[in-house]
Image (cartoon, rainbow, N blue to C red; front, side, top):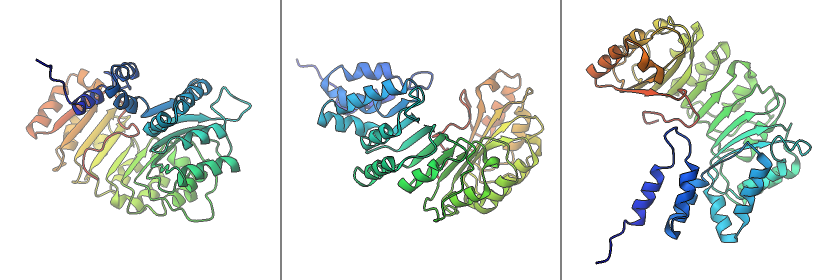
Amino acid sequence: MPQKQLAIELWIDIIETIYYDTHGAVDYATLSSCSRVCSSWTEPSQKLLFRSIDLTQDDSRRYRRLMAQIKSFPTRGKNLGSYIRVLEVSVGVISSPQWGIPQYEFAQLILFCPQLYHLTLWSALHKFDKDTMTVLQVATVGNGVQLRALNLAKCGRQSPILYQLISVWPGIQFLRIGGRICASPPSQPSSIKLHGLVLSFGEQLPSNMLDWLLSNSERSLHVLELWDEPGPRMRNLLSKHGGHLRVLRMPCFNKVAVEIMDLCPKLAELALVIFHSTALMRLRHLPSSIEHFAVRNMAKRSLHRPVINVINTLPNLRVVTCDQDSRQQADFSALQKACEIRSLDLRTDHKYLWLVGSSVISMI
């Protein structure tokens, strides 16, 4: 009697479930093993193997190995390059091979990634030269590369690379700026409509730069993440864009942080990093629309009682998230009971509260 075999669609579902290991990292070793089991497993395994590529360590060697794989066979190369959705790369000057790959190699790589969605760039350049910009334009117009998420992790303070990349990919919807950029924006108006913005040093970015970046985003900006202490510059930004904001993640330890929440009446998610136990006590009249309330406790004492006081004021709340260490505190059971009474989903997460790409609980 012939043995019944699972349909390949079911095997694909199984392979996708092992994409991450128990620590939340991509399980490349298991995926690589799956790709060699049989021919029907090769393509679905390779799609996951090449989905996210990191070239920030041992850049030149990894780049050469990747390009050799992509170019190994014309048809196979096309497939492998098209599997790359997320790319992290360091780009440096040719005279410093220990820092990244040369800019022309970066541009050549983009040519082979027609489905690229998210680019994280560490740049040691001042700007891209004319030839590189031409190749990037060809990748966009000729090969259909339509970048939607850009994480500019590092670049020079006076570098215009951010504006160069926006000119190539005006369809960028999610942007993270990891440095303290001071370069003046172009004279022509910005054409991007951002849905999400992450700022590591928001208060240190020029006002004209922020105004330029968000000039077309008054109704489209839904997610804002701040990694430094909010001040007058962020308060001014939210006076213009807070009305449509759905997700706000930020440190909460000063008066401005409390004030700017009043500028965001439609929040569905509020995530706070607390450095002082009194910070939560300042919170009054949070938007009733909040469905997900998250707290990262950096204070030495328990915050569960203040958290309970806050969540009891939110009628539409569905999810409460705390950091993993909260479970070790003596009064965690009180928070559990408060959530059980209201049938709230209480979650604890070992990760930092706002990772790029982290999910938003409610629909935006």
